[in-house]
Image (tube, rainbow, N blue to C red; front, side):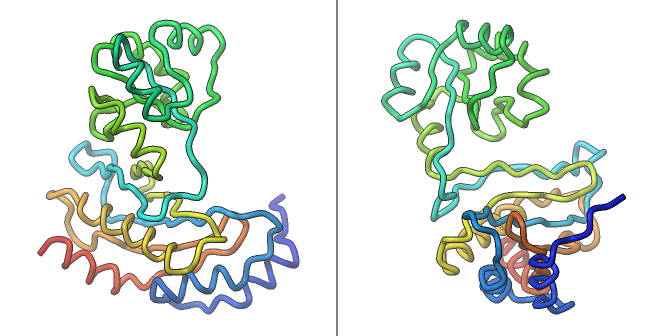
Length: 239
């Protein structure tokens, strides 16, 4: 049996009209109707007109949030030689080589939010697919987490770099900050994500690319974003 929403949630939901809001109004509304006692994460969800079953319609990428995410990620770097020193100097939380691979393999260790690896270590890191893959932590050249410039990669992740990837139902889910941020900060972060997703539109995608979009906080109800506004952004991004 589905759990009935609580009174506070229902009260918040009643303040959301059944329409699409401009992004800035949607952000202001979710801040107004908040009811949780902790600093919730704000998320954007975008339903795209793509079929992820086809490799040429996969939408994925990264974007560095201009205002960060309100929480510094714990970063693990798997590298060798001088690259380990570079990673430590850049602020990586855990750094190692084969020792880290063995620790993850033997203990199933996952006390980190992001993994960066140098290309020479990927043969060993590839063994960790069963642990890192399901958690979305597997290093990938396309997202900049397999690189020789480990210092830059660490700094970007620490600054609020977000990886986005369309799921099997054609939806992208991504955090854009904390509810305690100013509305301007959240709008800037959300706009950066939306622009990055629009720029990642596959050339083979036909019809309407952004079918719908919603912004919400961890505990609060979703607020629909004006898709026409997003389409205008899409046109601007392609210009």
